[in-house]
Length: 236
Ligand code: IPE
Ligand code: IPE
Ligand code: MG
Image (cartoon, rainbow, N blue to C red; front, side, top):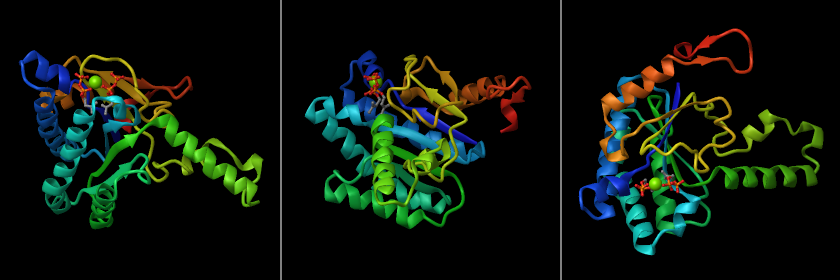
């Protein structure tokens, strides 16, 4: 099973407590650690977390720097432990334009954990669904121009295979915290048949009980995939 999480509401969590937004983001990292633990306990195969969107660059420079700093810290501090827990780390999003040190950190995290076969933790960083699709279209166009592909070869499966998530199954469940009910450019193509669960809590308050609530909601859904016969969500 693949669970995606839009970790939203760090700023509002902090504001409600009269704390700076950075404190909300820090507590958000704690919630992420808990979410990874819960995912392992729940036998989730893939956990994709939205940590920084392509649109988040439009925030004040200090906040952008804080968010990137927290990602670096998370990888530096937690990578060894994740590796010990047999977690495979994957990063999706645009990487070429990132600063060299950050790019190396992300590459190294993937390399170290490449042969792990426990939970696959997919971190969506500098990620935008539309940008990912546009990059896939550029690749496909180049292949057609080179004569390696025919236009008729461009099927949905072919498009999927040119995305960052090429070898990752589509998400079954997408959870968003903070009460907002939108995808904000997260896994647009891949979410075609995902079940969406919106939780009213802010991300720093996400714990095992919240994960259970979302999973129970998911299990109660009938996934029909356009058919008439019902596929119970708990079968996936
Ligand atoms: C989620 O919390 C973290 C990121 C988007 C990087 P926000 O920072 O969006 O918090 P709110 O939505 O302002 O409360
Ligand atoms: C989505 O949250 C991005 C992440 C959680 C990383 P935002 O807070 O950026 O989304 P909007 O702006 O409310 O749609
Ligand atoms: Mg937000």
